[in-house]
Length: 380
Image 1 (cartoon, rainbow, N blue to C red):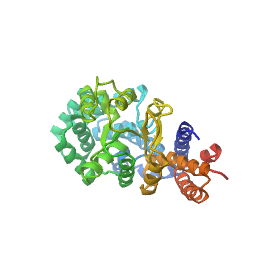
Image 2: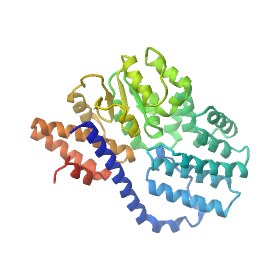
Image 3: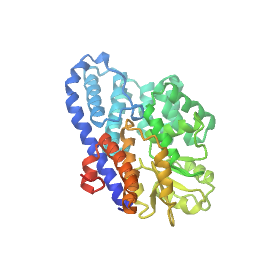
């Protein structure tokens, strides 16, 4: 089985999980009456805090929207609507926002600006709408100047420190994220597995808050794999960030543009091994046909032969593989399928049975069983 085929299977599993989450949310609708007293609603949570059920995120956004219609002057409710709406829309598209999504969020941010011009809520909403531009970080500066202790600022300030290469800021805000930022604990295990999957001195491209920030916390707070150069693909839109990453990777030649083109050029310009987190958008993986090799929770970009199956074997045995890490738990389907196919081809019945049993458990937890059965990865 080719890696491209397994990637397709993994993405199909993600779609299946989304449908399963939709069905679960339908069963929970009866609970919505508990929120009829809006004053009891908890503040909106972000994906890195465990709010990764797409249907539940959408339902939460609708509840906050209804409250805003009843209380048009309630700026706190408007900010919660904005945050939950953003989370729901990102959940539907692997952390990305479509032009329509951005327009909808801009409209809510406009309401906040009308209700409370110059407020913390206005500045924080503008940060997210304008991210990752200079205007976004200026809005963040103004929000932090007004209410510096707000927990909603922790991840944006950590992102800003990362963008600037501010070591002290990264240490400070990664510690705050673990201490009081609501970081979902399973994401820390997933981050540990992600870093484990990268060879010594490697460069790792990550997708967004769910895989980037926990990995930063692992490095900065727990002194885990500081040799790995983390690259938040969202920040590559900033020329200064691209320049700094290029220099940190000891790459030669002109600095390339953002996106997968940056990783493509980096492979040929540095001696450091380059890896892609499995949480990246499909477009990133499609940019390297025939050159991606599974190493665990990441894929290595290779110009020639791969490291061999031994690297994947060792990493697979050492990984924690949390099944309660939301969409990041789906990432274990791909390396498990690659390893299973290898053992079948080699005729290793004992290891085939061992990995197949583990993959069945993973598939059951992530909603991937039927897709893997149809693809022949799992057999009836």
